[in-house]
Amino acid sequence: MKEFLEGRLANALTPALGVVAFLFAWWFLTWLKWIDPVLLPSPQASAKAIWDGFASGNLTKDLLITIRRTLLAFAIAVGVCVPLGLMLGSSVRLYRSLEFVIDFFRSTPASALFPLFLVILGVGESTKVAVAAFGAGLLILFNTAYGVMNARKTRQAAARVMGASPLRVMTGVTLLESLPQTFVGMRSGVSFSLVIVIVAEMFIGSTDGLGQRVINAQSIFNMPEMYATIFAAGALGYALNLIFIVIERRFIHWGGK
Image 1 (cartoon, rainbow, N blue to C red):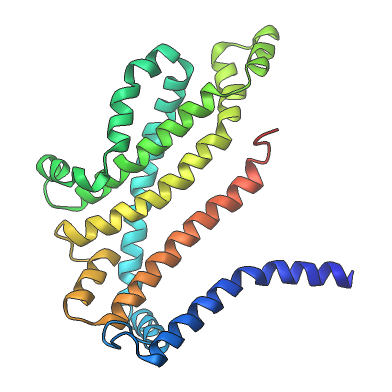
Image 2 (cartoon, one colour; image 1 turned 135 degrees about the horizontal axis):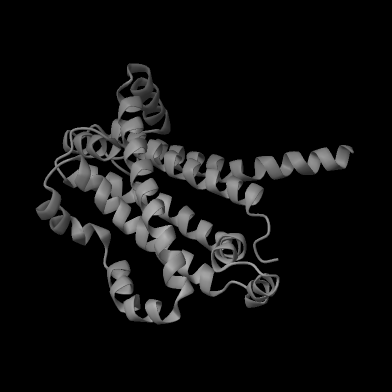
């Protein structure tokens, strides 16, 4: 029992080793002053900036705004692209006819499409959400379609033999078979949504959000606040990814079986 608990404790603490090593290396560099302290503040200064940001509510406000935009873009991407992915994956001919168009836009950096979305939607909230939903949606679309196409044909055939309707086969067999791959796309999609939202907040006339906070801090050389905001964005991305990993392990446990 003791060995088991020690093993569990060791596994739980292992991820913290990288964090400790990173903070030590950062502190050591600032202590040596190899880099101008104005450009690279100490971990203590950045930690104080994080504390002050949350204590004043300013960092909390911008963090919540970025979360709202990210989740809205992700929800739109899932709602539109999962059904489309099921349709594309169910018809090889339809998929082949649209593969070039979809792959072309998937290979195009989403940030390069900012001018297009600005022309169509103007400078505002909808542009930030739309471009993030577009970029994330393509990832979800492809992964859902691949999941459907790679579904085990024997299980689908068995369901048809037992008299299941096409709709029942789709919802009861094909959809469940494709969920592991769909979740891969969703996990990548939510991270991509966050990245695009923050970039959009930097460059599309935003007055709030983490991206705008980073740009403002950088423009006045408030480096502790800039690093604090960057770390808040990184922690948010890590948390979103971790949530999807937990959900996947808990509810999509049949992947690969």
